[in-house]
Amino acid sequence: MEIRGPMLLPARREDVELETLDGLTLVGELALPETRDPVATLVTLHPLPTAGGFMDSHILRKAAGRLPALADLAVLRFNTRGTTSPRGTSQGAFDGGRAEAFDVAAAMDLVQARGLPRPWLVGWSFGTELALKYGRDHAIEGAVLLSPPLHRATDEDVAAWAGEERRLVVLVPEFDDYLRPDAAAERFAAVPEAVLIPVEGGKHLWVGENQTRRVLTEIVAAVNPDALPLPVEWDGPIAPDV
Image 1 (spheres, one colour):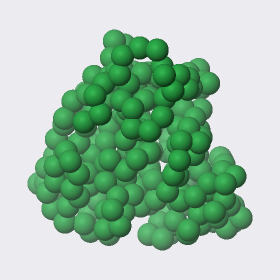
Image 2 (cartoon, rainbow, N blue to C red):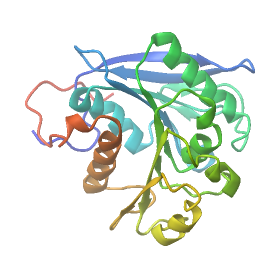
Image 3 (cartoon, rainbow, N blue to C red):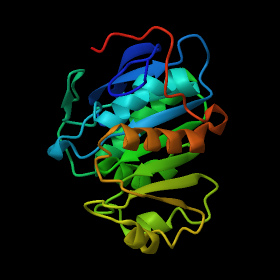
Image 4 (cartoon, helix red, strand yellow):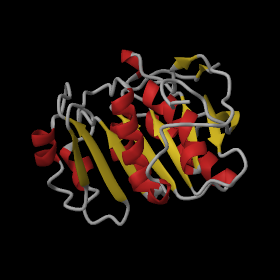
């Protein structure tokens, strides 16, 4: 059958709780390959919670639903402080990207505690701001930025990635609501090592199966290129969509 929409491919899925240094409990889910150890780890950072972003925002949910099976990746999703999803509500209150530094740190603490390999941050919209501002504080291999608005992340936050061995991969939709490819090229010029990928026809919310597949393919190309091309058909069992 064709792989599309919210289909959940087989994986070991576990509800997790993250404990922040300022005393909050955040709710999340860890998805691992069903029968193998992961070759790398995606730590996902969701879009703006005050605009409806949460750990189930569709690209992140589809990454967790597909990539453990298709690319041998571990995928950690969680709600930042004050954010609610069907998984539950994380304690605390939205802080505009400031105290969320503790949330990123709590996720990385779980990665370290579980011995998960080769962590990458995958931020979408607001989540890219967290990745840019705080990712360099942690032992990551790199960051994939989806639709970066560069509202809260300053030019100084971006320029701090210059000269880093950790990779920065930036997907910019052609028709983004906030930052389009030409403007993104200017804003990221301070980081010559950054890989800027304009996505023809793309929009900020990456709606539609074609855009989903493009995003997931670019994530895997950065993190585990040996798994490409990603299959578009699945012949095995699927998990119930819950």
